[in-house]
Length: 247
Image 1 (cartoon, rainbow, N blue to C red):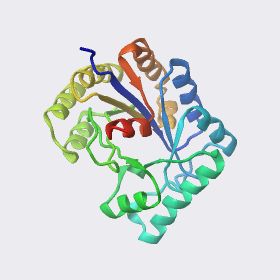
Image 2 (cartoon, rainbow, N blue to C red):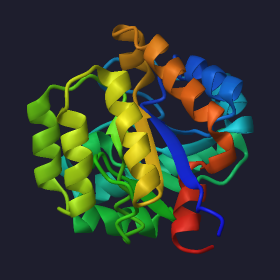
Image 3 (cartoon, one colour):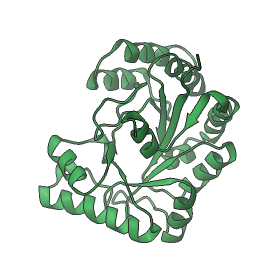
Image 4 (cartoon, one colour):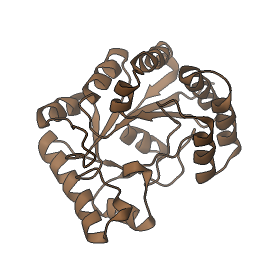
């Protein structure tokens, strides 16, 4: 009997110019990626130029992340709708490609915001829920496995408590809390996701990778994944969403 391949997907938020360097590394190792891009960033960080965005969209999925990179649950319904729909229209105009996925800014969403995202024509939406090895079953609550960031233990414990508990998530939590650096944590989670659940989802921000000089860690993870490509199905977030739904 053929063993089911591990689905591996990566996603990167905020549309920072360092996304281009992330894309180069992903391309080097043949790993798929999805980039969630706002028109601009109200927090003051730079974003990709339209030329850079078009270039990125040739090989990778581009998704929505609001016009101004603002927490949409803090806004009135009309403004939240504008932030979601106009961002999608702009991205499709710039790239000339359909934009199917959305990422909630800072992972904050409500049932009302999920309805807005769905109404805007997005097929799915990604959250920041970590420690998952399988889809939740809700297309507008796509979870992740781990962020490329050296969080302290209490952060993982809080994230675990905020999302659906399960035996698999508990295994991922304890593996994450075990001693070792970020690269070792990720390595353990890849192994566990292969054993049960079937999906490994790495996400992050290229500006954090830059600020914390995590490029070596990222490249080591990608190199490990590329070495196991015979047993891995690399997918964008949209492709992972479709696979989960049997499409």
